[in-house]
Length: 74
Image (cartoon, rainbow, N blue to C red; front, top):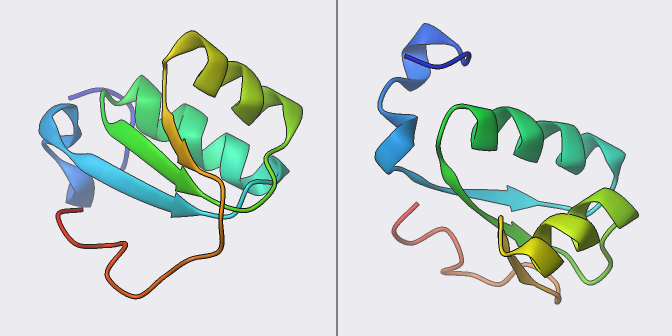
């Protein structure tokens, strides 16, 4: 298992959603990606590190506010 809490095993096959696009979200995304998870960020605005990850195809971003149903499949 890659470095994430033991209660979150199997992240290498998981789709994880992070709500928010600031520095805290960027740290969460970094940890989830290091553990192998595919990450979708939902936020109208993204900080530079998240914009870079999106540009590289490392994560997906929905640049809009959270909507009911966004967590389906996560």
